[in-house]
Length: 177
Image (tube, rainbow, N blue to C red; front, side, top):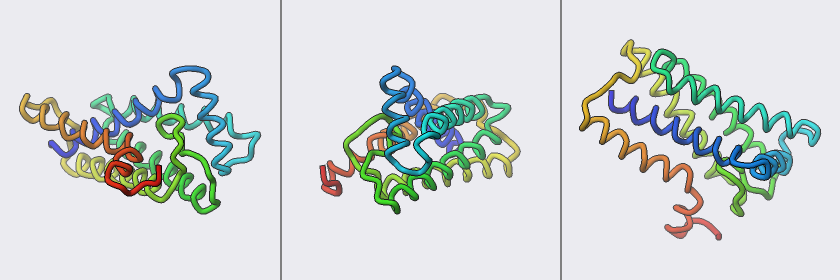
């Protein structure tokens, strides 16, 4: 199940990079918390709680996705987490929040429809892989070396595209940097 393995690796890497960007220092977490406040999707007094909840959700989801026995429910949890994040970003875009999404650390790029689309696509990928695994009655199994190499390579490209979306868009002339 190459597709499932690619999605599991992609989701796990995206969650890991997101967590590291938020937890690498007290300053980084503070910027994330302030970013939630700047997005204007929760009252100021709840920004710290929302930041902790987001990090806890990412951490639990990462654990579920990585453990073979819980990969299938973990993919559904990941899909739900990404759907919630897409909803939050969508609300921020509609409200005209002029700040970064802080998904992978503080950036200068203002949250926009492309961030909503990226996060919604991650949700769809996670739900799709979860459904495929459930229907096939298997989690991502140990696989042969060539399949694993292909899965890692494809997931690597997807992770770079997800994490560096704004830079990729700028590279192709679709972002005002």
